[in-house]
Image: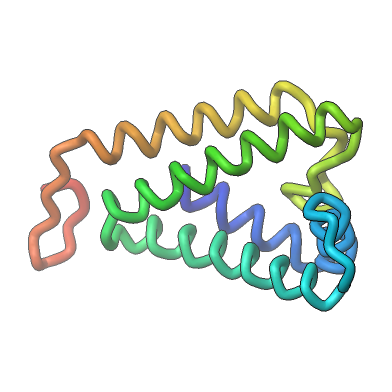
Length: 132
């Protein structure tokens, strides 16, 4: 599930990356669109990388820790955007305004990460996930 969410979010931002970059520029009060564009490319790349790493079941605990931190940041951004009435563009043009549901979604995703971190996952060298 985590893989699908992050791959989908990255894929949905790509066609509308310029609009997302403008939101990043406004959010972080940046003066240069080039800086906002670089941050946008980094975020899309990180989301895609996390999605792929979860998909191939590599470094699951470590990736879950990083993802939890990213989701905590997303929750803060969502809260701020709710206060300003702006949309997050989390899923590109499919995103509407920022709502409490966005925060709940990120809390649920963070809960999944915590469950992965706490789980006793053992992947043998053969690559069978979750000790199967």
